[in-house]
Length: 383
Image 1 (spheres, rainbow, N blue to C red):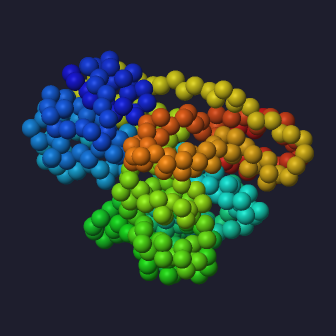
Image 2 (cartoon, rainbow, N blue to C red):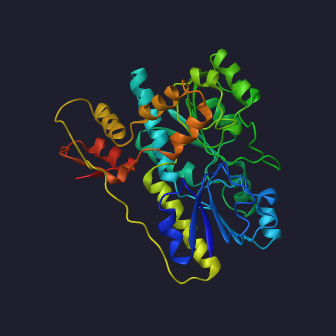
Image 3 (cartoon, one colour):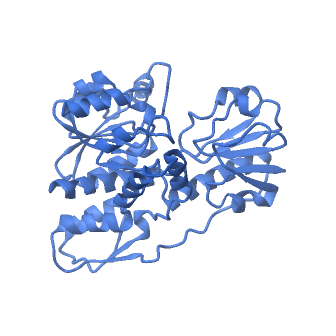
């Protein structure tokens, strides 16, 4: 059996080699000729999987080690009897921690706190739920909008699940964070969801975070909203036209990162594990595979004995995930002759980032009950 695995999928060889020859490939360079004799194809979001790529090949199974599936023509796969699996929820905690790191970074920058502010979550799947949990641990009020989930609940005769109307959410939120799939047609399209009308409905200057798909935002409308003062802080992990992104827009943002919100080590290995299991199930293999998760080189965070509680919480978050380093690397890459290649290289060579539960907070006094609760709610271990 020949199994083609994107070179950016961690432990891809280890996960699949028990059942055939594993061939690594660069996701943007893959051609139909390359995989003519492949039995299985394991990709990430940068590879378009459709008839143009697969027609006439031997591929019988496609897996994407991502939560998003808009890069895969599932209707075509179904028509050809080709098995398919994605990895729903694999990096939800990682993206939740990305939003947490962005919020706390902006709080330090502004001399404010997330607590007491209203966070509007647009898209309430696996990621949205983790974002809500962490935002509540920060003391934020949370509103959420997800028309497909709301409609499905109502159609089944169930409560609407506490979802807000999108227009009401826009009018009440201090911070907006986007977690929707890219959907171009149907009852609830998300292509250019954040358009001129979207920004016009904001009742006050807002923070906007996008870590789902770049095409969910109408970038000219966003630039106009920035000019009008409707968006006061901007965090972008995803962009239209990746890997060749609009550097003028980037210059207006407070934080920019190269589509790595879900790139924690645990998130990536969860994706590998889920797709590897689906591959085995499809082909009828009885074996299983589980990665060994290494610990951080310095897994302990010690309470210094003084200082404010918010400052220590921020310190814990940014010890685990120094988000500003990702921003700095991306901005520095704009000096290179081929910024698009640099964007992809940063994703390929992304440094190891452990999730919050890999870190233990030591020495926190028992009387720091609220701080303990907040840190535990974010996922840290508190000894």
